[in-house]
Length: 344
Image (cartoon, rainbow, N blue to C red; front, side):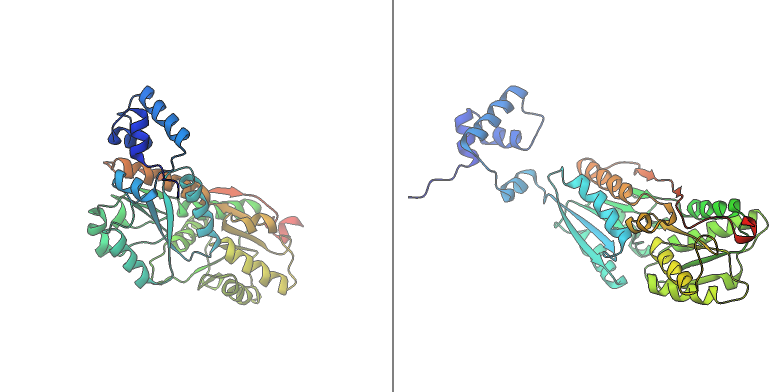
């Protein structure tokens, strides 16, 4: 004969309380006084009771699931943000479900269905600006939504964690100018993209604004824009470095693109930083490995803060919506230095 499994009724009977009280104690409800809770927890341990997750979800009226809608999951920027999210959820009751988006149609599908379904208790949207026509429906969503690294006016009334790409671009420019560079190039993403990404554009604007402030210009022939990727950036840098009047420094809109610039420099026999300075953006793990000077945008911290904000929103919706702002930082390594003429 199989041994009868222990259930919440057995716990309640042994502890001398109602099933509802035992369930509240198990779920951490504060309405149960400390002495009663301690007695119930002792009985749970004595009986070896393991609560059913399905029953726990039912008693709480929740799915105990957090959904993350993220673009291009395999990119190091996304992976690092997800590490921050996971660090918070690991110590919570919530499971993490990731929805990877690589097309605008898939983004729209997830936003339309998940925000108004009972499949999740909350949503994190990472680096995916929603279409403007979705703004009203997302604000009215019964599911709390927190945006990370999304910079569009339509979500300004929503909880969000944001960096400052304009300041980051200016930091990169200031560093290169202080080293003595006057011929500075930029490698970034194509201006038009189906997702409406803004980070590369804003980093370029920050660079150009700082150059203009000291009487310098970002010359058209020193701007290379294309699809995001290391090999695409390498090809853009090849063309830029093949000209007679090549720049003495290149700012790349991401560390991934900076690695492509470094590859192109090596192909031409250029030494870093003696012949060419390169600075990236993000501070992913590979940046430290290759000694890349970069702008740190606190990827892990943005994921961590976003997850904490979402758990708080699941408990109690905020009004007004909270905003966490993370400042970029210059990380000095070995790929930037004074231009050759300054060294001489």
